[in-house]
Image (cartoon, rainbow, N blue to C red):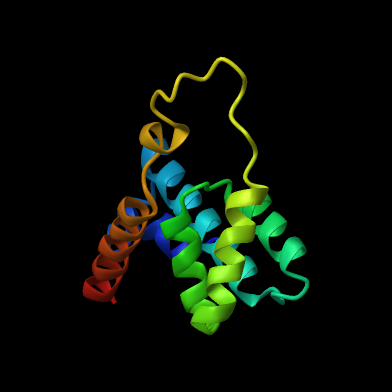
Length: 131
């Protein structure tokens, strides 16, 4: 589902056909993969809730309740359904390895969903300008 237009963006309009830099390709593939996983989660049925929550945790590997809340908003679930889903989400999160002292979690080392979506928005704007 990766967009070849995004991957070819650096050489569009150029007389010389060259491959995009590896760092650019990596960002595009990572961003598009995350977008694909979000779509899979949003399109998945939310019944039974345990399967939905486990699928979210497996596909997105994101333990942030705010991100999960955004997914529930995208699904258009009622607030009453969302609160029970959020509670289930908190219960189903994998426990950190023993000896964890409450130090920084993995989410600090990886880009946040907001940073990822910001990158994708910048790429979309570039594409629109070129087309």
